[in-house]
Length: 385
Picture 1 (cartoon, rainbow, N blue to C red):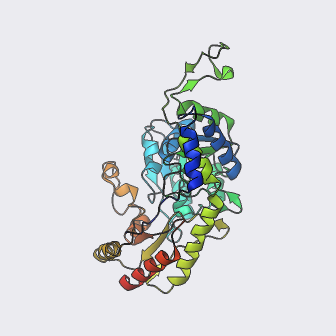
Picture 2: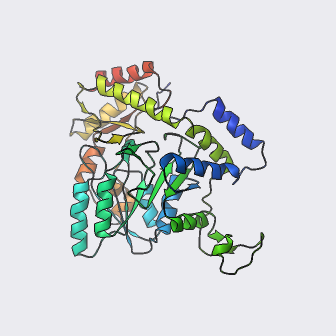
Picture 3: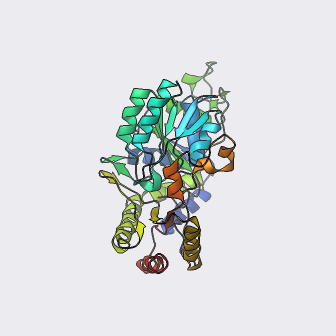
């Protein structure tokens, strides 16, 4: 049996909660969706939350709600899943990237500031910046917020990895330093709803727009109708929206999982601490965690100290062949064929490129036993010299 790099944890209470919904009158959008939204916003400290079918859907809707349109510019980091960038392309926007910090693997604040100053001179400033809380460690959001005020761009946090994380004792998703944050509930994330995501914001207009766009652009709130017909049957499609709704089965599972999130994050941090202690003398670079940060450790990424890609591939295969599920998070977005067609090329973002030639995500998840963690450590020590 392979030890996966991550997986969901489902217990009897989760199953019981889902079965209860299956026996109810609601399977699509029912009472559990709004309950989940309220519980999520309370947990992170935001005013509003909108549940959606995935974090990718959430990023797309968020770009639309922030007014991103054709020929506007969106920036993100190359070290992320493609959805952080494709949300902009879906709106017809132009795309660019900011290289990462060599230590944290998050967006580099120094490089961001330099790029913004240069973009200002050429009048090519971004309308939206999508910082990514890579591996569950929050970016320096107060620094990004400071720059957003100076250079007049919107901040859309890709918080897919970081539900339960905090920076300076402020929960990710509170939107204290951003316009919108988006979370993922894919099975390998902190909690799961099978698939699904949630958007948080403190802006009422953005919140109402998200609700409309989530359901085909349909408006049925009397105060927002163009034609004032006060009737239960009347509604209007005012925007070109999507069917990006979360269903009641998923929301119920999410609610049950949310009750365990503190336990889940603590467990992941315990495993991380054990890795830090037992792998510190190995010929690798371990994650660097900033001060004032609580990470969810969605991922635990080690970096090999080799510049030889052939050697990296050899080590990667050996670890896999010993029953340890590992992965690369991520191949830099700009090196995918789609983005090469746009003119991006190798050498554009050297730190992210170098990272991808050395990085390996090793197993970390709730329920991973000490025996299995010891097996991971033993095999790593045997293979990595």
